[in-house]
Image 1: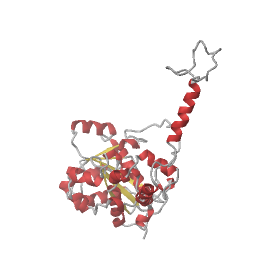
Image 2 (image 1 turned 120 degrees about the vertical axis):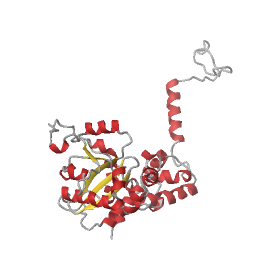
Image 3 (image 1 turned 90 degrees about the vertical axis):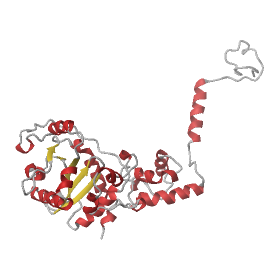
Image 4 (image 1 turned 30 degrees about the vertical axis):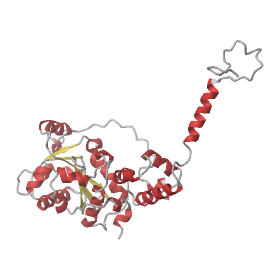
Length: 330
């Protein structure tokens, strides 16, 4: 065995005739040994049984309430001794009472179908000077304009009750209004009632621009832009067909609604009070996109404080947030 660097017999001239103990370096074998050691060092739970039990007691009840990990980490970051990636690994290893099935987003997404070429009629009267390009042009010249994204969420049948959703882009704060039917008349009545509730002054200030899709229920922009008295109150613009990403914040928020009201579930037994409760829990959920803040917290800074109060919203304590169907069960 060599007694000086590099302490191996590789390249030694006396190796064929040397009778001493020989040490030879094999690069491939060394790399394999290193990789095996690296894997072994990361196997298992790097917590004591007591620390693991405390973490389970805190995390599992919140996950079972339907709270996203983004919200849990935003609220309890100082109390969680591991990173989010490690927490997912622990869930994979089934060391908690909660399981992957309790997480809303821990699923595989279906492969998206290829978009087909569709002829788009952009000359429809209701879209005249209200296309997405017109919206971009308006925002370029009015960068401080308040934008609200508008859409509907349907139940089992399009003729039954549905939800009208309005989201303030500035803070992700969402209003949910229960409609008796998914029709132009119901949408216009709901907006007229909203104006009466929060006053025309606040509506003009915070609903200056409304961005929606091309659903049949929204194809009467004239009665949305002007009230029953004929006075102008907002501007309406439409996304391009098949481009839901143009109002992506609202589409993302609809996921939270579907946690509580799955697709195919009837909305006939719901009341407006139920929708206010649902919106309050959603608006009190912390978001990664808001750097750990909640829409409710940002709304206090970016919109008038009267709007949440007048529309029946209330802030929910972080650990009391429930985003499962049980929230609206009677």
